[in-house]
Length: 286
Ligand code: BGC
Image 1 (tube, protein in one colour):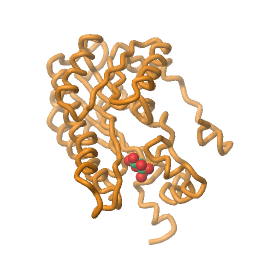
Image 2: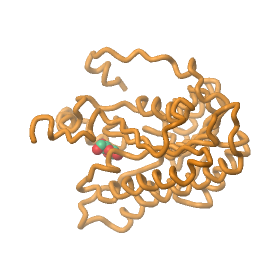
Image 3: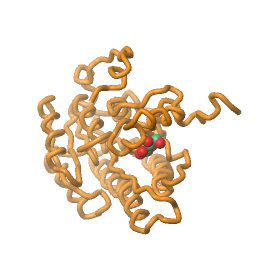
Image 4: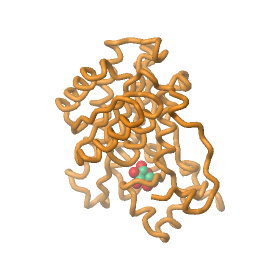
């Protein structure tokens, strides 16, 4: 798939390679929902930055395996582990397997998430529950296992000054209300205070908890919003920077948040949204 830059013939940013920086050498990252979209990009970026990676998935094992193969080719350790993040037993088994394989987990990218959209009066309990279970309960269960592991292990100064990092994939919709997506926005709003409260609670243990808040990023979850020229033009009314985001832009931010470059960053959501959270309606009005 061509990037937006290629598509529009725009100059592309010139960036140092993540391999070259090796910011996460000797650490292990566990990324949930790592077989597609933003999770895949986070897994690949953390691996390119030197971390071993646990590629979690719940469906399409072949996609997870392809991510792991790409990571191994980049010279880091990688395994795939199936687990439904909303299932306590499966999450615990996944962390146990990760620790058995790599010795510990240093970075959790709690990324697995989904949308089940419906007008509110038609929203089923199943749609509500599925979104809450994956987006919020799953974040709780994975973060709890990560915190337990970080507390058990403590700081390993040879790889990082912090005892561990948690990075949630949230959304601009942790603060932007979203009609027709009440379950999703509620899950992300909940995730915001899960993240901040947890960050406050475990900071003294030298555990750093933050979120990334993506805006419109080109992934399968929102193909309807960018898949046709008309939809894309509509979407751009919401994006001051006038382009859709690419998953690699999220991956690079995850590397920074996971590394000691961001050691004083605690309890923050880093919005990566081309300005979507800046009330774009006020560009021309107000
Ligand atoms: C949603 C996407 C949406 C974007 C901006 C994300 O959290 O998953 O479907 O395009 O927010 O509204």
